[in-house]
Length: 271
Image (tube, rainbow, N blue to C red; front, side, top):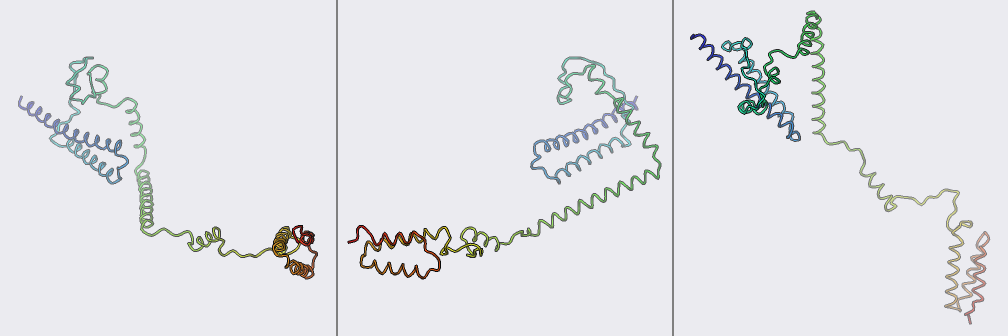
C-alpha cells in the first residue's frame, strides 16, 4: 500500500513539473506569435533568433524532465473518461482556457488519442522503411553532400553580407561630371559657348537672294523717308548717298528701293 502511495506522489510531482514546463513553453509561443502578428514592422532578425533560442531551450528542458529517472513512464498510464456530457462545463472551460467547452463523445477521441492518425502513422512507417533501405555508405555520402551544400550556401551568404557592409561604408561612386552638367545647362539656358558658324551654302543677312534682305532694305528706305520729310534740305545728300550705294553694289538692287526713292522725290508734303 505504501508503494502505491509513493508512486502516486511521484506521479503527481512529475505531472506538476511537466505542467509547469508546458505552461512556460505555451507562454513563450504565445508571445512569439503575438510579435509576429502585431510587431512585424519593428521585428528584427536578432530578436527572432532570441525567441527561437528560448523555445529550443524550453523544449530541451521538457525532454530532460520526461527522460529523468524519477519521472514515471507516462505511456504506461491509462486515462479513462468516466463521464461524457454534451452540456457546457465551466470548470473544463477554465482549465482549458476556453478551448474545450464540452467533454462529449465527439472530442474525446481527439483529446485522449495516444497514437497519431492512421494516415500519419502509415506515412511514418513508409519513411522508416525507406530510411532502413539506405546503406551506411550511401547515407554517409548523402550527409557529406548535404553538409557541403550547406557550407557553400553559408559562405555565399557571409560573402554577400561582407560586400553589403563594405559597400555601405565607402561613398557612392559618382556617375556624372559636374563641370559638363553646368556647361550644358549654361548653353541651353543662356547660349554660353555656342558659335555663330553657318554652313557654307547658306547666305548671310546682307547677301542678295536671302528672303530677309528686302525687308531690311525696305525698312532702311522707310527711315530715309521720315528724315526727308523732316529735313527737306538734306534730301539731295541722302539721295546721292543711296545712288552711291547703288553703284557700289555688284548685283542688281531690289525694285522696292527705286520705288521708294522716287516716292521720296515726289513727296506730297514737300514744299
